[in-house]
Length: 462
Ligand SMILES: Cc1cc2nc3c(=O)[nH]c(=O)nc-3n(C[C@H](O)[C@H](O)[C@H](O)COP(=O)(O)OP(=O)(O)OC[C@H]3O[C@@H](n4cnc5c(N)ncnc54)[C@H](O)[C@@H]3O)c2cc1C
Image (cartoon, rainbow, N blue to C red; front, top):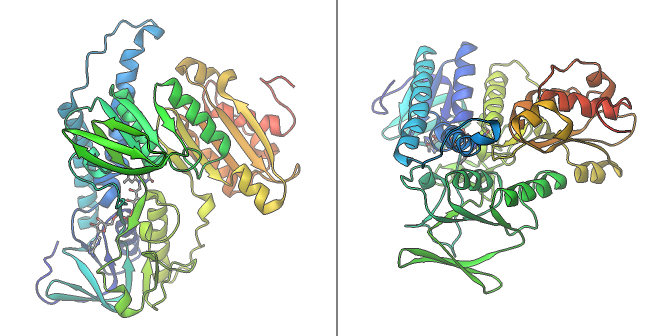
């Protein structure tokens, strides 16, 4: 590791931002024998490791343990749920983050990457200023990520928080209102409900997780209602403020609500301001860096990866883009990433996983959509776990490949792997049906859905 002060050598690549996109790019580039400087102003690992994927999934696991204790008697196990010890939950969560953080630091230093702590600013097509130092790179990779979007009429502070503060709460609020029914909002709704809070989700659009297939949104709303979570769609907030230790929320229809905590989860804004982009000619669109399919910005030699590039804001997309750019700079001619082939997971209870096009997208693109839905009710492992849900397959023609896989149900995130192979390899239903799926697994439901689509359903009525 190196400080920003003093002169620095010329690198093959200077990466600005050490989150999923940036560090993946740095590691792959170093693997390919390139010299790399990685500039990070806060902590290596970025949002995903410190304020996103990992800490939220640790909280979701604690939530699952709480629910298992509550429902233990259903399975004939005598256990009593007492309470949530938030400081202990946070110790567990922070321990997971700390161990992964140490591992990542070890990886970066073992890869002989020059890790530079500081804020990078683009000063030309091949230079980055970090404090007094100037780093020169044959290529520059921008990977500065995103931050929670906030709303002017809902000022954050005190009991009005974003996901960053939500990860550090040391008590469980009694009444939580979550503004935003997207992935982050729904995951926190799930966590708080399992921790014992009364939870209301307010979503301005007419359905939750609006980028998912409509059938999944409807099933999620029903499942959340069953868990005691109120989800109000087509409901916009006019204003909110903290008063007398309570948050007062006014909706656009003039009705009011009160909560002990208001979590604002209305998306993520790109971190691209004060980075020198405009000055050197890197064009942006509402803050997102414009790139072509090879992730080249409008300035030759400058690339961008991760959440600052318009599209899905997911860690594994950032990893894939970082690797792609490293290989591109090393002259390997990698294949461009197909955005709709990236698996998407919402880790609420129930979980949602999808790859490819929704029914509506197939309908819009091909004029017709053909669907096969298979309920998890006939799936042995789902019965054992006590979960419901479905697998939905979408294609455009009866002799065409599967274009979209959409699933909802407890633990269904584990099915993302096969679903993405099916969509990305443009598998025909017969080909998947001929693969043997282990019994009893939830994975069988994916196999059964393809058997049904291939015209030979086994455990379903014809
Ligand atoms: C609550 C939450 C839960 C999430 N859960 C998931 C999940 O389960 N799965 C999933 O795939 N994704 C999840 N995400 C999204 C995921 O975290 C992001 O997609 C991913 O972190 C984006 O990686 P990135 O490298 O583009 O940016 P970031 O991870 O944001 O990293 C950018 C880095 O750049 C640094 N930086 C910024 N400006 C400068 C500068 N000028 N100089 C130097 N350094 C700079 C920042 O400090 C930061 O470390 C979640 C996000 C949130 C908020």
